[in-house]
Length: 277
Image 1 (cartoon, rainbow, N blue to C red):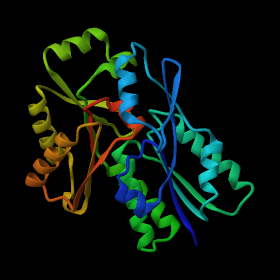
Image 2: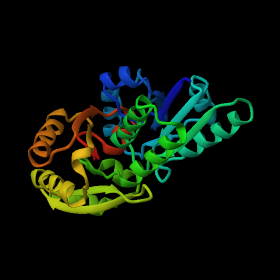
Image 3: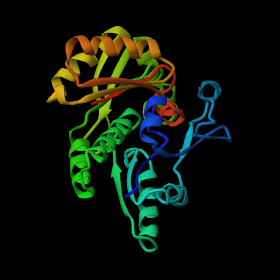
């Protein structure tokens, strides 16, 4: 039986993972001042970041259509789909609609997972699905194990630039300017439903990252059995330093570092870091 893992373009992968897992990535679209960027392999992320920096308007994103997902579903007999949190995007609904359409016309197994996360969170879920397929678990066992994995997964992030949160109305201009002026760095994460929550706020970048490392120990369980992922937006040096600090403190099964593609870069902005485990 042919298996296929499908995700949206918020799932950030390095070249090694792309070759190993062959995940079908369904792109979202990004609109900046009327110019549309398709978040696929042809996207120039540096150009995207520059356009975001120069724009005074809110960056808009649009979900893939059900038809976009259908194209990927056709490539497998057993299809596992991972989407960005349904609380952040309508992408999950599009994936479900595509499943319902194809269910009437073909005998396939399709299951859509709401990651309740984004970026590296989707990456880790895709990796876990791939692992279970290789271990020859049946489809229902994979579904149950992945749902449990999602419910136990933790996602945190630190943003170096708050501009997009301000433009998008998630942070008032006054609060944003005060935070910037006082060098307040909010540490944020996802809640149990996949919404964004404030975890802590610390003055100064270095202190914020030290606090993030502490939070891993406070909220993590059974770390030795888990992979921790770090995704970064144009901030490889900081991501690798964070990896080193985490390695010194905790005995994760593995730690991977990937660079963000377009959609994750819109949320995190230049310098942003997301971790999940």
